[in-house]
Length: 253
Image (tube, rainbow, N blue to C red):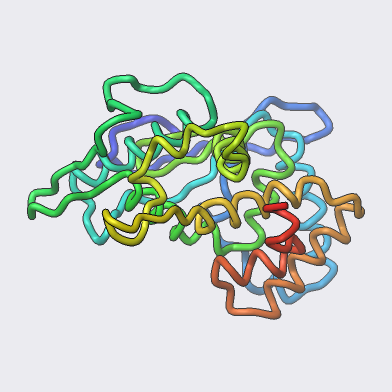
């Protein structure tokens, strides 16, 4: 994929390279292109695709996982991007990684003002990211389980999936990692008088995927479980968690 400005058409140079030659490459998220529907009805071809996808993602240097354009509460303005950047910064703080000190955490809740006057917070942006279609596509689980490195792309922003997993893991360990308690905006619900923290919309989907990396079944069996799960339900994020075989009590224990 050739470089260019955002308004330019995407151009490609395609060539055939054998994986046996051990090439260095980045893999693209499966949501960047849909498979041939006819091939999906051919069980032999599907099995070949599954095995090949496992190798493609497993041997890449980095997988680029696309969340789509940044839209927060229906807003795609600069304010939405600012709120998304604040959410990314919050995750880095929770994961105990270098972050942008100019965003002022811990401290005042950063609120990005949209042109319509709406206040878009980091918490709203994080919720919008977790609502992205990527989390509802079971097959994309392999894009972060198999590669040695995975990078989440959301609009012009990027963050390591390892950072997201660390943030989710530390969030359910408040005694050892209390940072998220300082970022009230991120998970707060209720009222100012009776606030409460609800981290489940973030931690359950992320830690379920993390849990999948430790399956001790063969890769074929694991992917078959994903396929069966995909066929069983019209997936919401909460449903996907249970069908992935990662019960909430196991994650939060």
